[in-house]
Image (cartoon, rainbow, N blue to C red; front, side):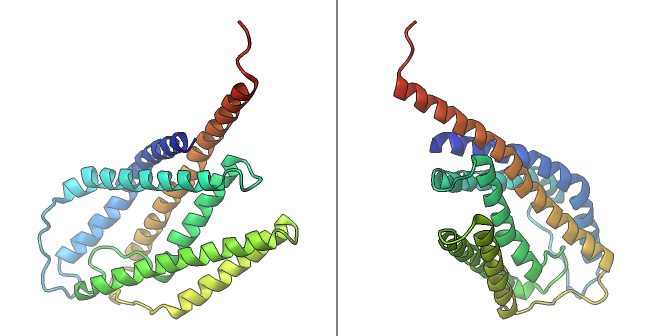
Length: 248
């Protein structure tokens, strides 16, 4: 079953990547172009803008679709592995399990890190601090994932002594508490120039957030349906194997 789930998850990721590419190409890329134009025009306090080894045409077409395909395919595979681990351990349908995993992944790996360290367009931030900023962002992702795992464990443990709704509420409260403490403890980063257009900054961040919603939400919906089909087919095969093939 794990092989069929992996295949379904990765194929779902490829389909979602096409939708994400269409959105990014039509809506997000023009915002990036505007930010690059400001940077090249000397809008910020940069000594100069180095010419990239890869052209913008390649970046916004082949590079974008390749990156999204790899990202979405990997996420689909991880969701499939998570579903295979939970299958039989939770009394929920595969579709609901996929939705839960996708929601938990989006909140812990995308929403919380972006609330602390929002995405920034080209030209924003000191080039000398990009290494430390990237390190902090990945530490935030890892720590947020740990908070989600601890919250799941707390909810699972309390489910034995109370109703499901109560254990879920306790798990949510635990994550909110842990994530809030994490965000407060991580150092703040503020390198956006005061004269940078606020509308451009907000538009870029809105597109970045919506793109992630398309990826995670699309995977939850598409792979959820595919996982339901795989599980039903697997149960059918098990019934045939246990009862034997009927006589012709």
